[in-house]
Picture 1 (cartoon, rainbow, N blue to C red):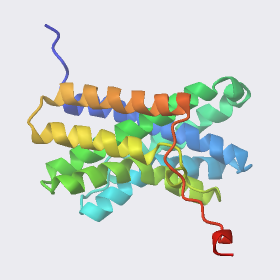
Picture 2 (tube, one colour):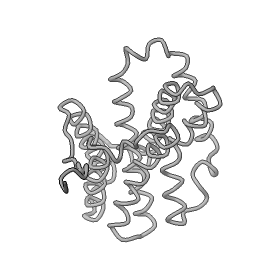
Picture 3 (cartoon, rainbow, N blue to C red):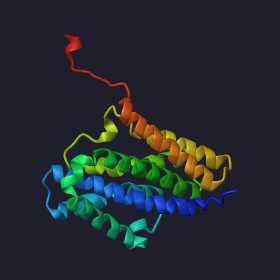
Picture 4 (cartoon, one colour):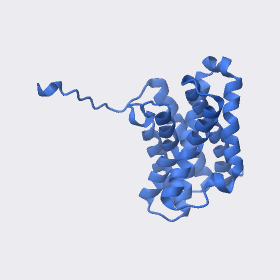
Length: 214
């Protein structure tokens, strides 16, 4: 029998990877807007840490993660420089960055749910906390880059976070083993997001131009 690591250890390792991934994808967005290096670093930190910060403020969960552990802030500031250094290869690594973004979305969702669960809030709030953690950083990134947030487009993004949160929170309520539940939720969310990208799965669009009234 394989001894699975504790859920906290799995989430801790994945969270570091997700923070770096989100900061690096934010650096790409900053590069498309021709931001200076300071702007690249700030956007990376806001994207990677924004969702968790908003969640903690709303839930009254203090100290904030990056205040308690400044190494998280340092990681999100330094990771964009990796993207700058490999900028010439970015066009060859599009799929890699999509995978990194998907990892960030799923891991942040699970981590947000886990923190809310430990605070003994209702299960609905646990799921919402997961969505805020997973999606809010990307919304802040897109707003600062003057783009329509990915969350509000037809592409399956928030839906992935919602279903991943439902699976994880449901498993917690049923008392499933933490390590197994984390692995299952991560695999489900990542596969769902990547399949949505591959097959261009979209939510129905609401299109209203006003011409229908004429």
